[in-house]
Structures are given as structure tokens and as C-alpha cells.
Image (cartoon, rainbow, N blue to C red):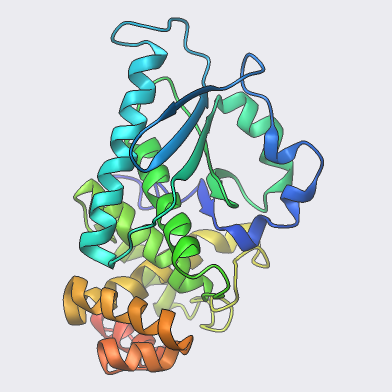
Length: 277
């Protein structure tokens, strides 16, 4: 069996969490592996990339890598509309960094190890090819970018913001939002009374949490969003977001989509595991 938390040691963070960090001079425009980015456009994305790939052309060249990254993003864009009713009108910018450059440029600014973040631009820790982890990070950050484009002034609770991103990345990969090991970890945490309070994951971001609490926070967020989908499918998520964008009232939007407020949703999620807080 896989490690219960294989994808949860390195996280992804939304715009509000990094607003202060990106004010550090030079942080938002860190140079790539050779000091400059290659740039390529697709229908909905502007990609800048400077992963240390030895050759420009060929099966393992940087041009194919850029094409593959854009294909992942464009596929995610189409799925966004189908599942969440999100269709950003402006072209989304994305930057893929050489891993060493990403770590050196942003590692000290982030509250816990990160594979990517969104702060007006999608920025991710790259690879020499599109791996499962890189695709997961791109899809996760795409949700943050799409939510920002749809409602830039709306402060979503972290559980919804991160939970939607986790749920969508799993959906794009064709896997459940919670794997067997992750469900077991969540159930064990609930059994021992170790779940984070709903208030703690309802803040605008998760940077106030201790690094060791991050895995559980992301799992709880994914579980809550998965429970919305379990109650009403993709339509419930689309209704939730449409209502939330109109009213700005989360409990009202949840009631419209699921018949439950946030507390009721948490209780329903726990009941699905045969648990209670």
C-alpha cells in the first residue's frame, strides 16, 4: 500500500497566504536556471519556463516539455468549466521553475515545503518532464487562479479554497479525492480527537498553522469538499460557487447546494467515516 500521505508533504498555497512574502524584492521575478525564461502561449495560458533541460528539441527537449505543460493546463481549463462552472476570461500566467531555483527563491518565504503557489501568477516547482506530481500541482494552482479570476475580492475560507483545489486535482488525475491511506489517517485522527477545529481551517489561509498540522488541514479540506460532491455531484459544487459569488454568504450557498450549513457539512463528513467529533 502507498504511503498514506504521499502527496501531502509538499503543499500548494493560495494568493492570500503569500501576499506579504511576494513583496520581498525580487521574489516575484526570480531568475530561472540560466537567468531567463522561455515563453510560450496557448489559448488560455501564457507559460514561462526555465527548467534546466539540456536540449531545446527532441522527445526530452524543452519545447516538448512546454507543450506538455500547456496541454495539462488546457485540459484542466476544460474540466474546470465542466465540474465547477469556472471559465476564466483572461489568459492565466504560469511560471515553471527549475527545482533548485524554486527552492532557493521561495523556500524561505513559505510556511511549509511547497510544490507551488498562486499569487496572481501560477508558480510551480518544475521537473524535466510532466510527472504526476507536477500535473497535480498545475491543476491545484489552476483552481486558485480560476477562483481569483471569478471573485477577486471574495475571501474564501481555506477549507473551501484548498479543498476545491485538492478535489479538482484528484478528479483531473482520475483518482478519488481521498485514497484509502488518507481516509484511514483522517479517521484515526478523528478517533483520537486530533482533528483541527473548523474555525482553524476557515481562516482565509493556512499559514497560521504549525507545519506539522498542514497534512491534516489539507485532508480535512478535501474531505469537506468531497462530501459536498457526495451529496449532490458536480452540480452541487457549481451551485455552491455560483451562489457564493452572488451573495458572499457561505452558509447560504452551502444550504442551497447541500441543505447543510458549514457545521452540518462537517458532521455529515464525519458520519461518512462512521465518526463524530
